[in-house]
Image 1: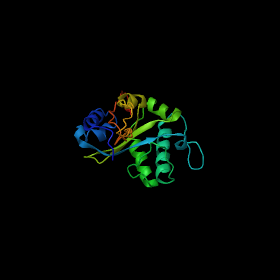
Image 2 (image 1 turned 120 degrees about the vertical axis):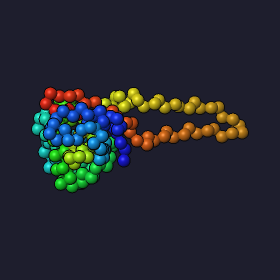
Image 3 (image 1 turned 30 degrees about the vertical axis):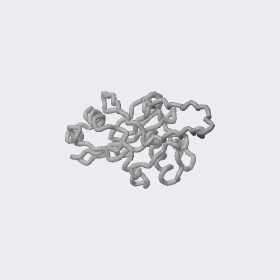
Image 4 (image 1 turned 90 degrees about the vertical axis):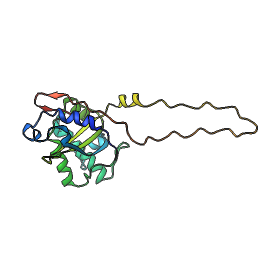
Length: 199
């Protein structure tokens, strides 16, 4: 399973938690957290309506974001409807498990930028399920990936120049491009909000 976040990035993220102090005070320092799983998904227009065709967007709010995430996982696991970038997840294949995802999501607060990306766009996300080792609390957060930055970090592919054919040797054929084994690691940036942590 691909991991999109380094242990040091996780420590920085969790060390900056400002919300739910009664719960999280029991969990600090950051080493008391672990990544349970992570996955990638594209939130597209098919994830913005339910199976009856009704819109899941109720405005620029967290409820719209979590409704789209739930529908994306239902599309992948129940209806076998996938976007090209969708990959398997953390076992959100039942209504009960998606209810738990929603509870874990609501322990965090999405930033206005995250909400806008979901409501107005079709973001690529890296999603994380994190567990506090002491309290057993789960936290779920999707990180919107800056795809322009991902493209900048990709190495340029070298194209072999054709060589003139030799009468004694066959012309070499270019090798097919290598497939990426996994996505690049993405560091999380978590700006602190006055009333809680934002993702």
